[in-house]
Amino acid sequence: MDILSQLFWTFLKVNLLSTSGPASVGLLYHEAVGKLVTEGQFVQAVGLSSVLPGSDALQLAMYIGYAAGGIPGGFVSLAASILPPTIIILGVTMILHRLRRESWISNFVEGLAPAISVLMVFTAWKIFDKGSGDTGWFGWLLGIASLIAMWFKLPERIVIILAGMIGIIFLSQ
Image 1 (tube, rainbow, N blue to C red):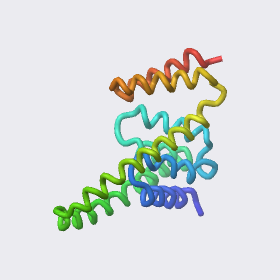
Image 2 (cartoon, rainbow, N blue to C red):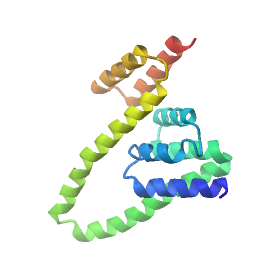
Image 3 (cartoon, rainbow, N blue to C red):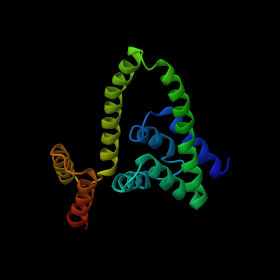
Image 4 (tube, one colour):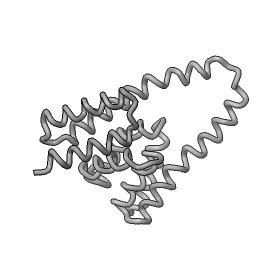
């Protein structure tokens, strides 16, 4: 299978089986690392897509597509990422429009939130564990400081940029 087909089917599968951008990172990690990109490239892609404005999942798809297949790979990955949600949301919208007064619909949506939250924490742990390398206690300190900054409602992009700059200053050897 050529690389463009592999990218298309990988991102089509990831976007059909996951429920949101951040939640798809764990599945994408499993599907892409070792097959399309290295673990280091994946960690860099997640960090970069978190800093840039816009959809993290689409930026991650374009980065991995570009790393694996150049500019055509980026476009194929983007198209495969956009296609399933677009078709699904059109179908779901038509169905929900007919069922909008049913109470089980709102209960279903409320039940998704805890599951997605746990999935995001698990994925963040895997990325931190693999990406922290030999930073030791300093990595933990930086992670805790970032968590505290986000607790106090500092903008996420500012926290990530500052953490990266601190890493450049204190972790460069």
